[in-house]
Length: 461
Image (cartoon, rainbow, N blue to C red; front, side):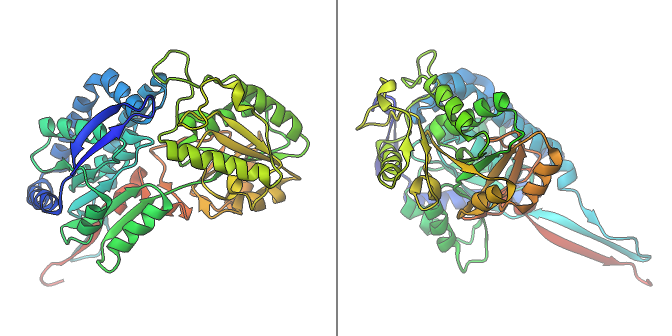
């Protein structure tokens, strides 16, 4: 079956391809299994050298890669190069952590015994990657999986198939056959191969509903599943926050990539003493954005990925207004806004409440709700009042306060004076409906290996 990828920029077709059927997927799994038997036995030094070459080969034509990101999902071209720099940073971080993270774990000395735990590779890792950060999301799983001695079967979103093609092409030049393969697959075929005994681990990034489908397909088969799902990430602006620094950072955290980030800021709670000032500053900051063709200079806000996504975003705003909230930005301020298309004007919503979708559900667009709170206790309760828990940020010059608040937040990452960022030396993890398992850091290697204990006794001991 053939499929097309349509650019949100102008509706043009940027890729045409063929979906692999179940038989083709099984052939790829068989090839991966064979490759794993060899790859797992190669020393870490060789795997590291090969993965390093893979990363360098992939990044050789950054200009073309950046343009393809823009065409496939609509992010401004001026911002796409940053994703490639992030890919390199995360890959290099995991390479630097591999030797220590994958080393044997010795037990305490005991005369006559050699005892240690070894981290062994699992086999074929099925990576199901999302479109919104097509390379950053993928690198989180594929590089540590390969370093650990696993092999990868990559299925990318049908919105960003060129990314899978590029990664696979680099692998063909640098890695043994079968170590990193890609297939374009339907959701139905993915569900059919997840239970296959040759799939040892599934790394999925996407929606909560998609995560549930993956979890269901893997259920009863005793295999590992990593789920990086949605977010409704909150920020809290304390009374002592530096507003000159805080406001532009929060607006960027809400609007970058047209708000299409699982850790983008969607809820902001402001101490009541600064609420009006923060709202006024944010409104002015947002009105300074340029919505338009992401290939053009000066554009810092492109279309959202699909028209149906735009429909949902606008409905979240409309529902909030019907329920008593106020949308402060007139879409007519942005000439490129298309009420029937994917170009969505950025929006600032006030007087929102927890029962509105704009506060309760993942909007995944250039929209942020701002609400007043009386202090720390009020803010903590509001931030935790969510089915999601990926990141949360506290904006304050009081580090002790940030720590106290952070310890009470139900979230995977706590930021002070930062947001919408992923540090590859720290575990990337969500709680509640934001997922299970983790990627990156030394902890990320644990998800992609299984422990094997060696208990060796010398005769006569």
